[in-house]
Length: 181
Image 1: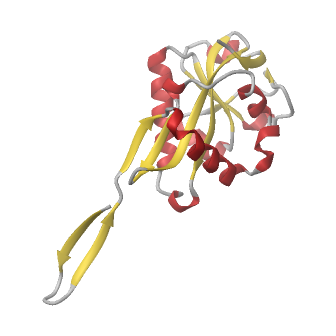
Image 2 (image 1 turned 60 degrees about the vertical axis):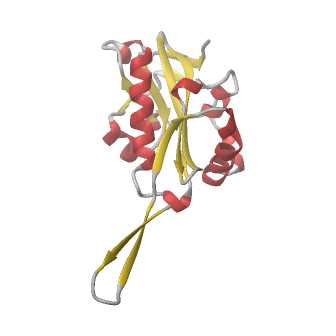
C-alpha cells in the first residue's frame, strides 16, 4: 500500500492509502483464493446450479480467465469455460465474484470487460452467462431468445444472456449447451 502525504495546514497531515489493483490472467496458484471467493459469494449451493453442471464437464480456459489482486491478495475472479451453444462456439462466463470488502468499485465490470475482449481476440463467437440483466445488460449483454438453449438443469430463461461476437450468433443459439474441447 502506498501512502500519499498531503500537508493541508501547518501541523496537520492527511494520510491517504492508494490501493493498486492489478488484473492478471489466472494460473493454478490462484485456485485456493478463487475457491474461497466463490464460496463467500455463492455459498455451498453453487455446485448444484445449471452453469456449474456445465463447468463440471471440462476445465475452464485459463487463457480467458482473470483475477484482480489488491496488494498481492486475490480479491476477485472471473472464469470462462468453452461451450457449444446450439451451433455457436462460445464461452460461458462465470463465476464472477468479488470479495465483499471490494464490492462497488467496478472490479467485476472490469473483469467482465477484460474477459469479453480476450474471448473476442481468441475467436469466440459469443459470451454467454446466467445472470442478472440489470447488472450485465449495461456491459453489452442481451437476452437470449426464450428457451432457445437447453441447460443441464433448471434455468430462468430471462437470466440467459449473451454478448454476440459473430453476426449470426443469436440465430444459431438454439439447442443444447455443453462443454466443448
